[in-house]
Image 1 (cartoon, helix red, strand yellow):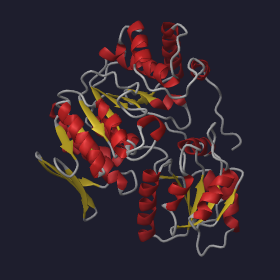
Image 2 (tube, rainbow, N blue to C red):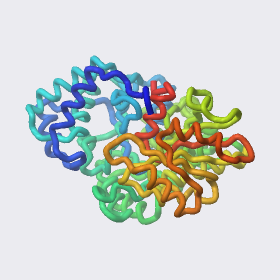
Image 3 (cartoon, rainbow, N blue to C red):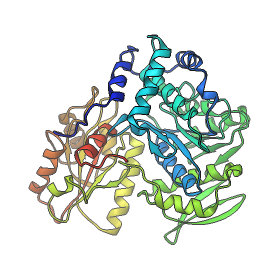
Length: 441
C-alpha cells in the first residue's frame, strides 16, 4: 500500500540498530537476557504484581479483557503485548497509555549501553527495555504476554507471578516449540510457578493433560475451564460460574463466539486472585469496553470501506493459523445467521503458515478470495494464496495489494453488497490499519 508508512521516530532508529545484534530472528534462551537484566540492576525483581499470559490463540484478547476490567475497577495497569500492528510503541502500555517515543527511546538506549554490544535477540533486548520501564512507574498490575512458547520466552523471568494463564493451545511455530500439541503445551506450561494460580482456558484433551501435570508438578492451584469455572451464553447474556457463585454478564464488545471463552478466562483469572478485589460491576464494564484492534474489527466507517460498493461491510482480523481461522469462520457464520451477505476474502499470509489449511476453513463459506502479499521478509506470494484457495474449491485471483483487491470487488457478480474480510496476517492487518488511518491508540 502506498502512503501507509509512518515517519521514523527516535525509538524506531534505535530499534533498527538493535535488530542487528543477533544473527537469528528467533533463538529461544534465557541466558543472554538474564545477563542483560543483571547489568540493568534486575528490573524484573522490581515490577508490579504480574499476570503472565501464554497460549497460541486469544492471548491478546484475554489481556485486553483483563486490562479493561482492572481499569474499570480503578486499577493502574501496565501491559506488554506482541507483535505490534502499526508502531512498536503499541507493545508497551504504562498505566494504560502507549509509551511515549521519548521514554521508549531512552529505555532502549540505556538497555543498549548495558548490553555493551553482546549478542542478543531483538525480542530479548526490547523486553529488557520494557521491564525497565515497568519497574520505574508504579502500577497495581502488570499484564505480561508471552512472545513465543513460554518456558524459554524472554518474559519468563518472573519468579512469583500473581497468576499464570494459558489460553487455547494449538499447532503453531512447530520449528521452535516441537512437532506435536503435547510438545507445544509443555512449552506453554513453562510459565507455571509454585503457588501461583494456573488459569487454563478450554483445551484439546491432549494439551490439557500436559498442562494439568505441569501445574501439579509446579504446585500451582488449578482453575480449568469446564471444571473449576464455566462460561456460556444464555438468552443473549453470558453466565459465568465458579465456586464463588454466578455472574450474569453482557456479551463482550469484541465480536465472535471465541471471545466468550477469552472473556471467561479473564474473569476466571481475576476471581482466582481475590486479593485484587475486582467487583462484578468492573467485570461487566470491562466486557463492554475491551478493545483489541484487528480482531474481527469493523472498518465499515473508515477510509478503505469507501472503495467498496455501497452497502458493503468491511472487516479486519489478524488470524493467521488454522485455529485462528476456525474462530474467524465461526464469527463470520454468526454474522451470516443474522444478516446474510456474500463473503469475499482478501487474504495475505507468511510462508511460515499453511495457506491451504487456513483457507480450507472458509470453503463453502467464502464466495471469492483475492490473494495479496503482506509486508515482511517471509511474505507468501499472492499467487500461492490463489493456488491454495483453488485447491479448497474457492474461486480466487491475485491482486497487487489490498487497495487493488478492494477496487476489484465491484467487478464480482454478487447477489448483494458483500461482507469483505481482510485476514491471514497481523503484518497485513497493521498495514491495513495504517492505510485506513485508524492505528491503535
